[in-house]
Image 1 (cartoon, rainbow, N blue to C red):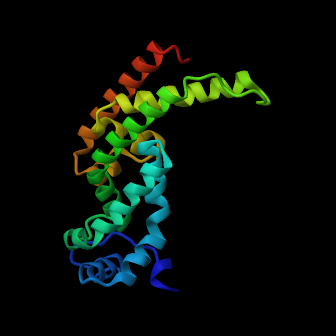
Image 2 (image 1 turned 90 degrees about the horizontal axis):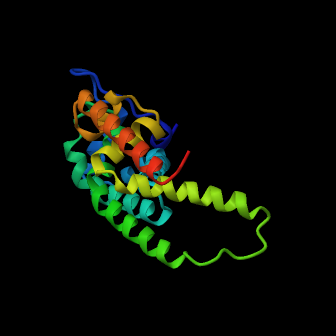
Amino acid sequence: MTSANMPLHLTSVGSAPTEADCVARRIADGDPAAIGEVYDAHGAAIRAFARRLLGEDSAAEDLVHDVFVALPKAASRFRGESSLRTFLFSIAVNHARHHVRSATRRRAAIDRLTREPAPEGSSNPERDARRAELAELLTRALDALPLEQRVAFVLCEVEERTAGEAGAITGAPEATMRTRLFHAKRKLRELLSREGAR
């Protein structure tokens, strides 16, 4: 089994180094093959999280790129207190702010350009229009959340992580994540209700 296919587990305090520890050490030492192994093992999960957080593929790809560019420098901070995947998620969260702002600006520009009548020929124009409208409402509502609440909502509600797991990713206490999620859900309900979503 290659390193890319081996699971990367938590390290117990005082135990022998795990595969994750060894890979992190190789990355910190500048081994490019180690970055490739980590990308193969975890890139898809980081990309899925980025898409859910940012709402568009191009911004998600940019964030994934930033995570793996930042990884060699960040790897020296990996202490094995969480999984390597959780560590990668924390890097993504730390780099997300710029990408969230950029994605929101792009969506606003696209929204202005697409306020023209839909082209004819759609198989079910009413259904397609309602589906697009709901997706747009959800995206705009997420855009209106502060980044910390948005991250909490995506991690806990979309990715179905516990508040403790989300806290490990963001570096916030579990109670703080629960509070952020509560406020995110309340604000989303208010925004969607105001927009007329059911």
